[in-house]
View 1 (tube, one colour):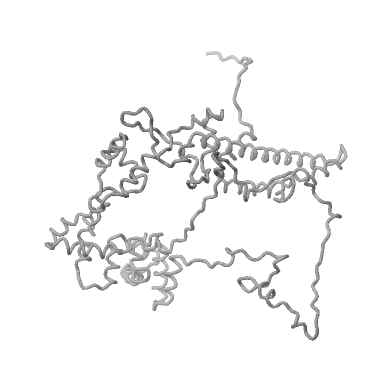
View 2 (cartoon, rainbow, N blue to C red; view 1 turned 120 degrees about the vertical axis):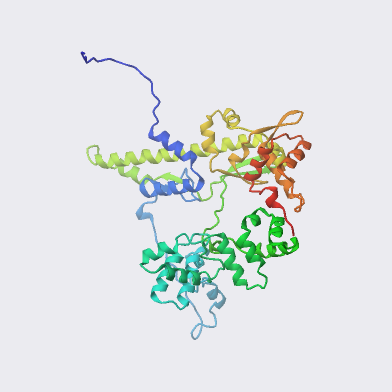
Length: 479
């Protein structure tokens, strides 16, 4: 076998994404909060970027020279006889004190924000450790109690077995069981349970009720309780269905997740990217620039470069040029992002004009290609634009992807209906049902046929589950 080395010329075309194009694509798919974080990070790393004040004119804004900056001092003189108490403005003096008792001037110094005056909420661990420290425990028992509290999940259930804690602390498992039993009597009731059954039993025993039936139902018929098979419970316990209902009424008031009372999660508020409002008979679109940094190039570095001679500061010039190019591309990419969001939002409003006028029942089926063809962009670009972007409309705040729905055929009609409209129809049907006789999925299919909507039972079940609605057996109420 003979190997030969040859040189050949080959001409090919290859699509290469430049760093600038990658940056534009990345900025396009960022949410509003992520974009603000990215811009703020770039402001820290790139000295040529600066945040332009909101009241400045981008056309005439210039960086002031150091010599032109002047410091003004203000003095206030109190005149009057004696010690000045007669002419002193006591009302204004009291108003100058902030909510925490710290004086500040309304003119020169900002008051502390409301968030800075709030206290930290107590977590589940803090609440339980506070009770542990108030209880009479030995040092070893207190250490075991801290281990138990440290192994609780957000629902308040213990995730480690007593044997594991005993092995970790090198103690007898019986001692861990004793400490666990004492911790289970802490507030909130039902905390530190191993499972749902133990959680409910702890709460029932703390109630100290006369009837043993609720405890027996939780102990022996938890599955029937979940499926609401009260007849089976009455038959096995040889009691009337009314007695079962009375016991179940008490059990239903117990908390299956006691730890959620001290949940530390905070609500995340949505800041819309686009505002849609109606002016006369026309819907107008406005981008939300509130809170977004207004970027501009710092002219000071441009003057530094112009003051350098040709043969000096080459390394400095190269650094400034690189940062200038990066800053310019960032500003242009953000401007392009805003223009793209505006065009896509404008197209969505035009396609879904009946939704804005009449409501969700008039939401049209729409796919990414419909908007892509309208704005002459690729579908992948539309997908990036509509991800984690929100629109504030007269009918509420919606994610841009909300307006993209598959179509469902109507009975005897060529016009389709959007899947979101069908979901809303199912939600309305269930909200108007009799709680003692809830509709099954098959019955909902028949009701939808009366509205010229033909879908399968499994589709109804899928839409119902996406709405967070339980099945008919779990929606039934006996009292």
